[in-house]
Image (cartoon, rainbow, N blue to C red; front, side):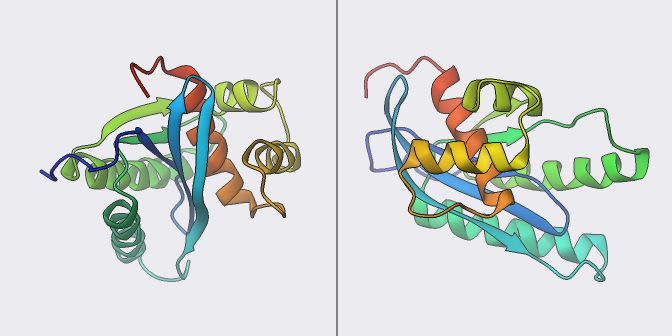
Amino acid sequence: MASSPSHTAPRVLGVDPGTRITGYAVLSVRGPGRFEYLECGSFRVDGRRKLNERLGELAGALEEVVAEFRPTVLAIESAFHGQNAASALKLAEARGAFKLVALRAGLEIHEYAPSRIKRVVVGKGRATKAEVQRRVRLLCGLTRLPAADAADALAIALCHAHSVRWSGG
């Protein structure tokens, strides 16, 4: 297990899981509804490669983010029912790989349904990707719109930051 982070404010790593593109975002939480944006982006792997190879590469990239930013919490999108069975199984494998990275680093893990994330961040559970991008840009004070997967990861991290009652901070 990793030692506890040296920073005092909880850090949230938001992850929008995928098997070809995975979005990530890191926030430092200063109190209820107060946060500092640290970084967001996405990892891309060649979709023609075998699933196990892609997941290994994506998990390795996430390990690097964990090592650099030392988050205390992983907030990840939960599986949703609108997918076909094959896609849902692949996504479940990706979620499992990312959760294992978090467990090995000693992070708490929290899962949020897509509709809850959108409701908390945008104000409606059926918000479009473009609405999510515009809202996280505004909330985080970004100069330009983040890519869709990075914006989704930011929304997940923001959802956690607004959903959990922090002690101290």
